[in-house]
Image 1 (cartoon, rainbow, N blue to C red):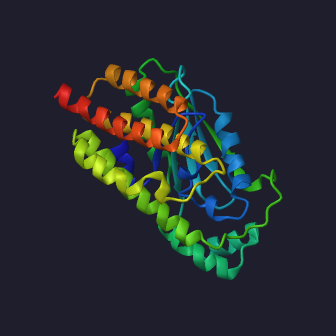
Image 2: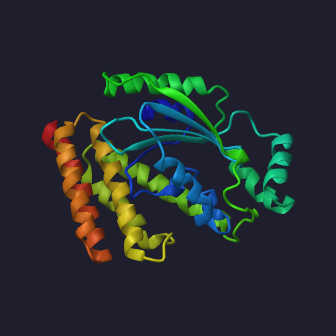
Amino acid sequence: MIYFFSLLKTDFYILTPPHYDITLLDRVFRNGLTESDNHYRGMRLHLEKLETNTFYFVQDKYFMNYISFLPYSDSSEIMTVGPYLLSPCDEKMFKDLIKSTSITQSELYQLKGFYYNLPVISNNLVIISALNNVISYINPDSAPFQIIDVNKKTEQTIPEIFHLSTDLEVKIQTVEKRYQLENQVLDLIATGDSQKALEIYRKFTIGSFPSRYKDGLRDLKNHAYTANTLFRKAAKRNAVHPFYLDQLSFEIAQAIEQKTTKDQLLYLLENAIRNTATWYKITH
């Protein structure tokens, strides 16, 4: 599945509630707006209401598209695809964006680079076909999935005045750099190279990036929960048995919540990288 979405240049995420990084879903777009917490609240509410055996198509008021669903009936894990555009950017789309969000021309200039880098998928059925095949493989007894179209452009849940925060470009560049390094770490975990994975991981400890929350420890714990899920998925790429991965991931998740300092959490994450990569060597 990951390979398929990489071909489409589309983001694909597996989220484990309640601790996940909501800014992943829109490539940190709303994090660059003033009152970003309010903007992300609607996304969280949508994800909390997902039902099983359903693909949710969402187009938000920024013309970005997403698909979200629950792949397992007995798990709270959420899968998301997006953001992507249904058609290439053009001046009409940008004019409509100005009209629907009260964005200024100067702010639009800053955003154009972001939009031009979004993937374009003109037919949602291409993604749905791939997802159905994957669902049938991982859960053969699953009932057929229905499709619900959720159009967020007409929602009025938040009285909105659209303004970019002054450091939007810096935030986007910082997150892009972090994702590049994270992908390198995951590739190394998948091949069992724990030493190199640790070297790269130490380049982007949480202190190197701005905190998203006032509670720094909570920020790092959320990061740790996300990292734990990603480490497990990376090791699974090379046929490490799910039994071992599930056991290790569960132990790490329990340990995360018990830690009371940032140093303890950083040490735990380094051990998680080392132990997850080690399972590859044991089983190959």
